[in-house]
Image (cartoon, rainbow, N blue to C red; front, side, top):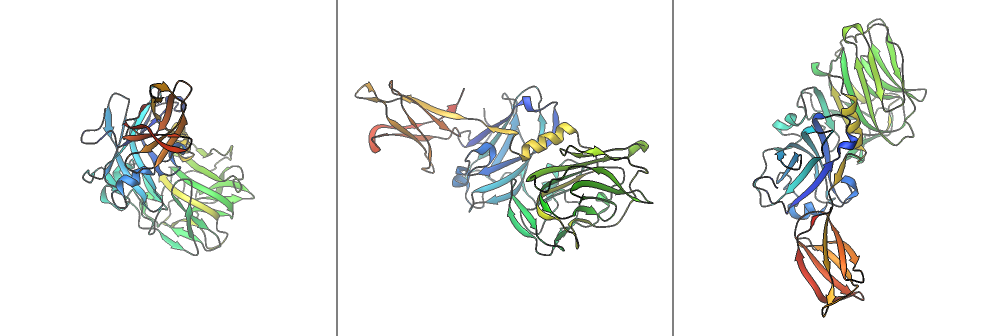
Length: 406
Protein backbone atom coordinates (compact mmCIF):
# COMPACT_ATOMS: atom_id res chain seq x y z
CA UNK A 1 0.00 0.00 0.00
CA UNK A 2 1.30 3.44 -0.92
CA UNK A 3 0.01 6.96 -1.48
CA UNK A 4 -1.18 7.51 -5.03
CA UNK A 5 1.53 9.09 -7.17
CA UNK A 6 4.36 8.27 -4.75
CA UNK A 7 6.93 5.47 -4.80
CA UNK A 8 6.80 3.20 -1.77
CA UNK A 9 10.46 2.31 -2.37
CA UNK A 10 11.31 5.89 -1.38
CA UNK A 11 9.59 6.05 1.97
CA UNK A 12 10.29 5.85 5.69
CA UNK A 13 7.67 4.13 7.85
CA UNK A 14 7.06 4.86 11.52
CA UNK A 15 4.44 3.82 14.06
CA UNK A 16 2.79 5.19 17.18
CA UNK A 17 1.94 2.25 19.41
CA UNK A 18 -1.43 2.33 21.19
CA UNK A 19 0.10 1.19 24.48
CA UNK A 20 1.44 4.71 25.09
CA UNK A 21 -1.85 6.49 24.23
CA UNK A 22 -4.53 6.33 26.94
CA UNK A 23 -7.35 7.63 24.72
CA UNK A 24 -7.79 8.74 21.11
CA UNK A 25 -6.16 12.07 20.20
CA UNK A 26 -7.62 14.31 17.50
CA UNK A 27 -5.67 16.83 15.38
CA UNK A 28 -2.35 16.17 17.06
CA UNK A 29 0.65 18.09 15.72
CA UNK A 30 3.46 15.57 15.51
CA UNK A 31 7.16 16.40 15.26
CA UNK A 32 9.01 14.30 12.67
CA UNK A 33 12.76 14.82 12.51
CA UNK A 34 15.02 13.69 9.68
CA UNK A 35 18.76 13.40 10.17
CA UNK A 36 21.82 11.41 11.14
CA UNK A 37 20.52 10.44 14.58
CA UNK A 38 17.04 11.81 15.13
CA UNK A 39 13.71 9.99 15.19
CA UNK A 40 14.04 6.89 17.36
CA UNK A 41 17.84 7.12 17.07
CA UNK A 42 17.87 6.13 13.37
CA UNK A 43 19.98 7.62 10.61
CA UNK A 44 17.54 8.92 8.01
CA UNK A 45 19.98 11.37 6.41
CA UNK A 46 19.76 9.43 3.13
CA UNK A 47 16.56 11.42 2.50
CA UNK A 48 18.81 14.42 1.78
CA UNK A 49 20.88 12.34 -0.64
CA UNK A 50 17.69 11.99 -2.66
CA UNK A 51 16.26 15.49 -2.24
CA UNK A 52 19.21 17.86 -1.93
CA UNK A 53 19.13 21.45 -0.71
CA UNK A 54 15.89 22.93 -1.94
CA UNK A 55 13.54 20.03 -2.56
CA UNK A 56 11.80 20.00 0.83
CA UNK A 57 8.37 20.27 -0.78
CA UNK A 58 8.95 17.06 -2.73
CA UNK A 59 7.77 15.01 0.25
CA UNK A 60 4.48 13.72 1.59
CA UNK A 61 3.50 12.37 5.00
CA UNK A 62 0.56 10.08 5.62
CA UNK A 63 -1.16 8.48 8.58
CA UNK A 64 -3.34 5.39 8.68
CA UNK A 65 -4.31 2.16 10.39
CA UNK A 66 -2.27 -0.19 8.21
CA UNK A 67 -5.07 -0.69 5.70
CA UNK A 68 -5.62 2.91 4.57
CA UNK A 69 -3.39 5.96 4.10
CA UNK A 70 -4.45 9.58 4.35
CA UNK A 71 -2.20 12.53 3.58
CA UNK A 72 -1.34 15.05 6.31
CA UNK A 73 -0.67 18.77 6.29
CA UNK A 74 2.98 19.53 7.08
CA UNK A 75 4.94 22.58 8.21
CA UNK A 76 8.65 22.50 7.32
CA UNK A 77 10.17 24.40 10.24
CA UNK A 78 13.76 23.54 9.30
CA UNK A 79 15.49 22.01 6.28
CA UNK A 80 19.29 21.96 6.40
CA UNK A 81 21.05 20.01 3.66
CA UNK A 82 24.52 20.89 4.98
CA UNK A 83 23.78 19.29 8.37
CA UNK A 84 21.38 16.75 6.84
CA UNK A 85 18.72 17.70 9.33
CA UNK A 86 15.05 18.68 9.14
CA UNK A 87 12.18 19.40 11.54
CA UNK A 88 8.65 18.79 10.27
CA UNK A 89 5.41 19.50 12.17
CA UNK A 90 2.67 17.16 10.95
CA UNK A 91 -1.06 17.47 11.61
CA UNK A 92 -2.31 13.95 12.35
CA UNK A 93 -6.15 13.94 12.40
CA UNK A 94 -6.36 10.83 14.62
CA UNK A 95 -3.98 8.87 16.85
CA UNK A 96 -5.71 5.73 18.07
CA UNK A 97 -5.49 4.33 21.59
CA UNK A 98 -6.60 0.87 20.43
CA UNK A 99 -4.78 0.37 17.12
CA UNK A 100 -1.32 1.14 15.81
CA UNK A 101 -1.12 4.46 13.98
CA UNK A 102 1.16 4.26 10.93
CA UNK A 103 3.09 7.35 9.82
CA UNK A 104 4.91 7.29 6.48
CA UNK A 105 7.28 9.85 4.95
CA UNK A 106 7.63 9.78 1.15
CA UNK A 107 10.49 11.56 -0.58
CA UNK A 108 11.12 11.80 -4.33
CA UNK A 109 13.08 14.53 -6.12
CA UNK A 110 11.29 13.77 -9.39
CA UNK A 111 7.90 14.55 -7.85
CA UNK A 112 6.27 17.95 -8.29
CA UNK A 113 6.09 20.26 -5.26
CA UNK A 114 3.43 19.05 -2.85
CA UNK A 115 0.76 21.71 -2.06
CA UNK A 116 0.21 20.11 1.37
CA UNK A 117 3.74 21.05 2.47
CA UNK A 118 4.21 24.55 3.90
CA UNK A 119 7.17 26.61 5.00
CA UNK A 120 6.63 28.57 8.21
CA UNK A 121 6.21 31.84 6.30
CA UNK A 122 3.69 30.40 3.82
CA UNK A 123 0.09 31.61 3.88
CA UNK A 124 -1.40 28.17 4.53
CA UNK A 125 0.84 27.15 7.44
CA UNK A 126 -1.86 28.02 10.00
CA UNK A 127 -3.92 25.04 8.74
CA UNK A 128 -1.40 22.68 10.36
CA UNK A 129 -2.29 24.08 13.80
CA UNK A 130 -5.83 23.83 15.22
CA UNK A 131 -7.92 26.93 15.90
CA UNK A 132 -7.28 26.84 19.67
CA UNK A 133 -3.67 27.84 19.04
CA UNK A 134 -3.26 31.61 19.33
CA UNK A 135 0.49 31.59 18.86
CA UNK A 136 3.12 29.02 17.79
CA UNK A 137 6.75 30.06 17.57
CA UNK A 138 9.71 27.87 16.53
CA UNK A 139 13.16 29.36 16.95
CA UNK A 140 14.69 27.84 13.82
CA UNK A 141 15.34 31.06 11.93
CA UNK A 142 15.20 34.80 12.37
CA UNK A 143 12.95 36.63 12.02
CA UNK A 144 10.75 34.50 14.31
CA UNK A 145 7.36 34.07 12.64
CA UNK A 146 4.15 32.90 14.28
CA UNK A 147 3.04 29.72 12.49
CA UNK A 148 -0.63 30.52 13.19
CA UNK A 149 -0.30 33.79 11.26
CA UNK A 150 -2.04 35.69 14.06
CA UNK A 151 0.80 37.58 15.73
CA UNK A 152 3.41 40.00 14.44
CA UNK A 153 6.99 38.87 13.78
CA UNK A 154 8.87 38.62 17.09
CA UNK A 155 11.69 41.05 17.88
CA UNK A 156 14.94 39.90 19.55
CA UNK A 157 16.84 42.14 21.97
CA UNK A 158 20.23 41.72 23.61
CA UNK A 159 22.76 38.96 22.99
CA UNK A 160 20.39 36.04 22.40
CA UNK A 161 22.32 33.31 20.56
CA UNK A 162 21.20 30.38 18.36
CA UNK A 163 22.12 26.81 19.32
CA UNK A 164 21.00 23.26 18.64
CA UNK A 165 18.37 21.66 20.87
CA UNK A 166 16.39 18.44 21.17
CA UNK A 167 13.93 19.71 18.56
CA UNK A 168 15.67 21.80 15.93
CA UNK A 169 17.30 25.03 17.00
CA UNK A 170 16.91 26.98 20.22
CA UNK A 171 17.77 30.47 21.36
CA UNK A 172 20.17 30.87 24.30
CA UNK A 173 19.68 33.68 26.82
CA UNK A 174 22.96 34.66 28.51
CA UNK A 175 22.50 38.10 30.15
CA UNK A 176 20.00 40.58 31.54
CA UNK A 177 18.34 42.39 28.70
CA UNK A 178 18.17 39.23 26.57
CA UNK A 179 14.56 38.90 25.56
CA UNK A 180 12.14 38.21 22.72
CA UNK A 181 9.11 40.46 22.22
CA UNK A 182 6.14 38.58 20.73
CA UNK A 183 3.85 41.62 20.61
CA UNK A 184 0.43 42.21 22.17
CA UNK A 185 -2.25 40.92 19.79
CA UNK A 186 -5.78 40.63 21.14
CA UNK A 187 -5.62 36.86 20.54
CA UNK A 188 -3.10 36.40 23.36
CA UNK A 189 -4.90 38.81 25.72
CA UNK A 190 -6.35 35.78 27.52
CA UNK A 191 -8.34 36.22 30.72
CA UNK A 192 -10.21 33.01 31.56
CA UNK A 193 -8.51 29.97 30.05
CA UNK A 194 -5.18 29.10 28.45
CA UNK A 195 -2.44 26.53 27.92
CA UNK A 196 1.15 27.75 27.68
CA UNK A 197 3.73 25.27 26.36
CA UNK A 198 7.49 25.91 26.61
CA UNK A 199 10.38 23.66 25.62
CA UNK A 200 13.06 24.96 27.95
CA UNK A 201 16.53 24.20 29.32
CA UNK A 202 16.89 26.53 32.31
CA UNK A 203 20.20 27.18 34.06
CA UNK A 204 19.42 30.36 36.07
CA UNK A 205 17.47 33.61 36.08
CA UNK A 206 14.06 34.68 37.28
CA UNK A 207 11.87 36.02 34.47
CA UNK A 208 11.03 33.21 32.04
CA UNK A 209 7.71 33.95 30.30
CA UNK A 210 5.58 37.04 30.84
CA UNK A 211 2.61 38.91 29.41
CA UNK A 212 3.53 41.96 31.47
CA UNK A 213 1.91 41.47 34.87
CA UNK A 214 -1.19 39.93 33.26
CA UNK A 215 0.10 36.35 33.46
CA UNK A 216 3.66 35.11 33.74
CA UNK A 217 5.98 32.30 34.84
CA UNK A 218 9.10 32.95 36.85
CA UNK A 219 11.63 31.13 39.01
CA UNK A 220 10.84 32.20 42.59
CA UNK A 221 13.35 30.96 45.19
CA UNK A 222 14.19 28.07 42.86
CA UNK A 223 10.55 27.12 42.29
CA UNK A 224 8.59 27.52 39.07
CA UNK A 225 5.61 29.76 39.82
CA UNK A 226 2.68 30.97 37.74
CA UNK A 227 1.30 34.44 38.48
CA UNK A 228 -1.89 36.17 37.34
CA UNK A 229 -3.23 39.70 37.76
CA UNK A 230 -6.79 39.47 39.04
CA UNK A 231 -7.20 43.22 39.39
CA UNK A 232 -6.41 44.26 42.94
CA UNK A 233 -3.37 42.05 43.36
CA UNK A 234 -0.90 39.93 41.39
CA UNK A 235 -1.33 36.43 42.76
CA UNK A 236 0.90 33.38 42.80
CA UNK A 237 -1.53 30.71 41.68
CA UNK A 238 0.81 27.79 41.31
CA UNK A 239 4.21 26.68 42.52
CA UNK A 240 6.33 23.79 41.35
CA UNK A 241 9.79 22.34 41.68
CA UNK A 242 13.15 23.72 40.64
CA UNK A 243 14.03 22.87 37.02
CA UNK A 244 17.26 24.88 36.82
CA UNK A 245 19.36 21.71 36.61
CA UNK A 246 16.83 19.38 35.00
CA UNK A 247 18.03 19.71 31.39
CA UNK A 248 15.40 20.02 28.69
CA UNK A 249 11.87 20.16 30.11
CA UNK A 250 8.46 20.36 28.50
CA UNK A 251 6.90 23.03 30.74
CA UNK A 252 3.12 23.45 30.55
CA UNK A 253 0.87 25.92 32.40
CA UNK A 254 -2.87 25.20 32.35
CA UNK A 255 -5.28 27.85 33.58
CA UNK A 256 -9.09 27.83 33.79
CA UNK A 257 -11.09 30.45 35.68
CA UNK A 258 -14.42 29.79 33.94
CA UNK A 259 -17.70 29.62 35.89
CA UNK A 260 -16.06 31.27 38.90
CA UNK A 261 -13.91 28.19 39.53
CA UNK A 262 -10.21 27.60 39.21
CA UNK A 263 -8.13 24.82 37.74
CA UNK A 264 -4.50 25.72 37.28
CA UNK A 265 -1.47 23.52 36.82
CA UNK A 266 2.17 23.46 35.88
CA UNK A 267 2.38 20.07 34.25
CA UNK A 268 5.10 17.44 34.71
CA UNK A 269 6.75 19.23 37.64
CA UNK A 270 5.24 17.42 40.67
CA UNK A 271 3.67 20.71 41.68
CA UNK A 272 1.07 21.73 44.24
CA UNK A 273 -1.78 24.17 43.76
CA UNK A 274 -1.93 27.53 45.50
CA UNK A 275 -5.45 28.91 45.94
CA UNK A 276 -6.66 31.69 43.64
CA UNK A 277 -8.70 34.47 45.27
CA UNK A 278 -10.32 36.50 42.53
CA UNK A 279 -10.42 35.04 39.02
CA UNK A 280 -10.51 35.84 36.15
CA UNK A 281 -7.37 37.54 34.88
CA UNK A 282 -7.61 41.24 34.08
CA UNK A 283 -7.28 42.14 30.38
CA UNK A 284 -4.10 43.95 29.38
CA UNK A 285 -2.39 45.36 26.29
CA UNK A 286 1.06 44.51 27.66
CA UNK A 287 3.50 42.71 25.36
CA UNK A 288 4.40 39.05 25.64
CA UNK A 289 8.08 38.27 26.35
CA UNK A 290 10.50 35.48 26.98
CA UNK A 291 13.27 36.98 29.09
CA UNK A 292 13.37 40.48 30.54
CA UNK A 293 15.38 43.69 30.72
CA UNK A 294 16.32 42.68 34.28
CA UNK A 295 16.54 39.28 36.00
CA UNK A 296 16.27 37.56 32.63
CA UNK A 297 16.27 33.81 32.11
CA UNK A 298 19.63 32.10 31.57
CA UNK A 299 19.21 29.06 29.39
CA UNK A 300 17.68 27.83 26.16
CA UNK A 301 14.17 27.87 24.68
CA UNK A 302 13.25 26.09 21.44
CA UNK A 303 9.45 26.29 21.25
CA UNK A 304 6.60 28.46 22.57
CA UNK A 305 2.87 27.83 22.08
CA UNK A 306 -0.23 29.48 23.53
CA UNK A 307 -3.78 28.10 23.28
CA UNK A 308 -7.05 29.62 24.47
CA UNK A 309 -8.21 26.26 25.85
CA UNK A 310 -7.20 23.73 28.49
CA UNK A 311 -5.30 21.04 26.59
CA UNK A 312 -6.15 17.49 27.60
CA UNK A 313 -3.56 15.78 29.84
CA UNK A 314 -3.37 12.78 27.46
CA UNK A 315 -2.71 15.16 24.56
CA UNK A 316 0.01 16.97 26.54
CA UNK A 317 1.65 13.72 27.62
CA UNK A 318 1.87 12.69 23.97
CA UNK A 319 3.52 16.04 23.22
CA UNK A 320 6.05 15.45 25.99
CA UNK A 321 6.76 11.94 24.66
CA UNK A 322 7.18 13.35 21.17
CA UNK A 323 9.58 16.01 22.47
CA UNK A 324 11.59 13.31 24.29
CA UNK A 325 11.57 11.01 21.22
CA UNK A 326 9.42 8.41 22.96
CA UNK A 327 6.32 8.54 20.74
CA UNK A 328 7.40 7.52 17.24
CA UNK A 329 9.13 4.23 16.45
CA UNK A 330 10.80 3.66 13.08
CA UNK A 331 9.61 0.45 11.46
CA UNK A 332 12.51 -1.92 10.86
CA UNK A 333 13.21 -3.69 7.60
CA UNK A 334 15.66 -6.45 6.77
CA UNK A 335 17.36 -8.42 4.04
CA UNK A 336 18.10 -12.10 4.47
CA UNK A 337 19.72 -14.81 2.40
CA UNK A 338 22.15 -17.71 2.30
CA UNK A 339 25.86 -17.52 1.44
CA UNK A 340 27.23 -20.45 -0.56
CA UNK A 341 30.60 -20.99 -2.18
CA UNK A 342 30.52 -23.62 -4.92
CA UNK A 343 27.21 -24.74 -3.49
CA UNK A 344 28.53 -25.08 0.07
CA UNK A 345 27.13 -22.81 2.86
CA UNK A 346 29.81 -20.49 4.21
CA UNK A 347 30.25 -18.11 7.13
CA UNK A 348 31.14 -14.76 5.56
CA UNK A 349 31.01 -11.07 6.30
CA UNK A 350 28.07 -9.55 4.40
CA UNK A 351 27.42 -5.83 3.89
CA UNK A 352 24.28 -3.95 2.92
CA UNK A 353 24.65 -0.69 0.97
CA UNK A 354 22.04 1.85 -0.07
CA UNK A 355 21.98 1.56 -3.84
CA UNK A 356 21.45 5.26 -4.53
CA UNK A 357 23.90 6.82 -2.06
CA UNK A 358 26.42 3.97 -1.77
CA UNK A 359 26.24 4.38 2.01
CA UNK A 360 26.94 1.37 4.21
CA UNK A 361 23.70 0.52 6.04
CA UNK A 362 24.57 -2.58 8.07
CA UNK A 363 26.83 -5.63 8.27
CA UNK A 364 26.43 -9.19 9.46
CA UNK A 365 28.26 -12.52 9.58
CA UNK A 366 26.43 -15.44 8.05
CA UNK A 367 26.15 -18.48 10.33
CA UNK A 368 27.53 -21.97 9.73
CA UNK A 369 24.56 -22.65 7.46
CA UNK A 370 25.33 -19.53 5.42
CA UNK A 371 22.21 -17.69 6.68
CA UNK A 372 22.46 -13.92 7.20
CA UNK A 373 20.12 -11.11 8.23
CA UNK A 374 20.85 -7.44 7.50
CA UNK A 375 18.96 -4.50 9.01
CA UNK A 376 17.59 -1.83 6.65
CA UNK A 377 15.58 1.37 7.14
CA UNK A 378 13.39 1.53 4.06
CA UNK A 379 12.05 -0.55 1.19
CA UNK A 380 14.30 1.31 -1.24
CA UNK A 381 16.49 -1.00 -3.35
CA UNK A 382 19.83 -1.92 -1.77
CA UNK A 383 23.00 -3.71 -2.80
CA UNK A 384 24.26 -6.75 -0.89
CA UNK A 385 27.98 -7.48 -1.23
CA UNK A 386 29.99 -10.28 0.36
CA UNK A 387 33.48 -10.00 1.84
CA UNK A 388 35.83 -12.79 2.83
CA UNK A 389 38.84 -12.11 5.05
CA UNK A 390 38.08 -8.38 4.60
CA UNK A 391 38.68 -8.62 0.85
CA UNK A 392 36.13 -8.11 -1.88
CA UNK A 393 34.59 -11.36 -3.00
CA UNK A 394 32.32 -11.72 -6.00
CA UNK A 395 30.38 -14.62 -4.48
CA UNK A 396 27.56 -12.30 -3.32
CA UNK A 397 26.54 -9.34 -5.43
CA UNK A 398 22.80 -8.82 -5.54
CA UNK A 399 20.16 -6.12 -5.68
CA UNK A 400 17.41 -6.56 -3.10
CA UNK A 401 14.27 -4.89 -1.79
CA UNK A 402 14.24 -5.02 2.03
CA UNK A 403 11.02 -6.27 3.61
CA UNK A 404 9.32 -5.44 6.87
CA UNK A 405 10.86 -7.25 9.80
CA UNK A 406 8.37 -9.50 11.55
